[in-house]
Length: 43
Image (cartoon, rainbow, N blue to C red; front, top):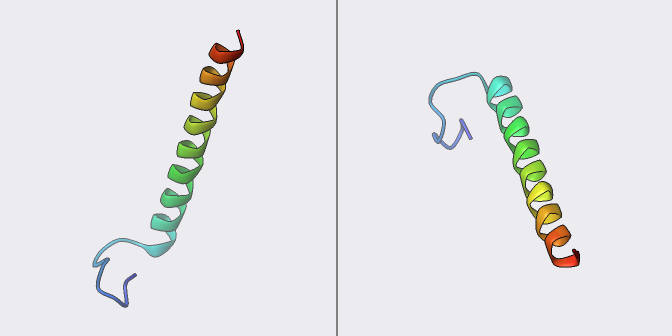
């Protein structure tokens, strides 16, 4: 990303860790969302 001039500031390691945490949070939100809806359909 830095080679392509898309990122001009920040540490790549911290950006990668931040990106990884956001990805985990989003996937957990999706799983909770699907669980609530599937429970509502089955009940």
